[in-house]
Length: 141
Figure 1: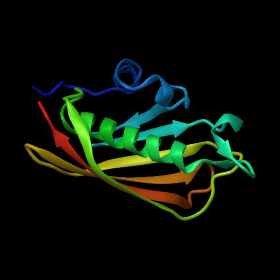
Figure 2 (figure 1 turned 135 degrees about the horizontal axis):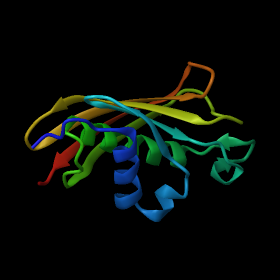
Figure 3 (figure 1 turned 135 degrees about the vertical axis):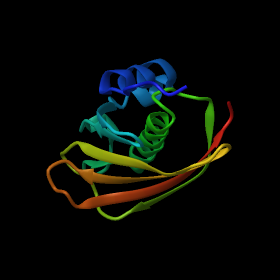
Figure 4 (figure 1 turned 180 degrees about the vertical axis):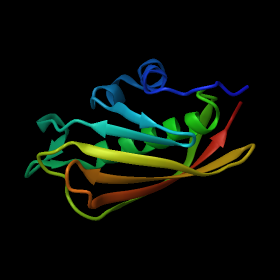
């Protein structure tokens, strides 16, 4: 049953209650949600960077997966149904240095057993894409 409104507070609660501690340690927060979208932020931190102050690919990949799952939750009426990542592909285009990462995820197709999502990652304030990811999710429940 669909909820009437999926709020940022509800999305942040799903994030806090259901994701691994190491994902939460990245400081990821939900900035915005829509009917089938979620915009997340990873705050810049030296702990998330590799040599040269570049936000690591591992951080961006885990953020992308998290953003797509929360967009999927929005599309499913604001609930986190059991699901698992079947496939994810990330293309890195430019580094994120000294700024937050903004992740804008969207559900492209929501089926009964599979969902297809995408996310664009950009450096806060730049508007230019830094990475793009797609993901396929198996809906288990």
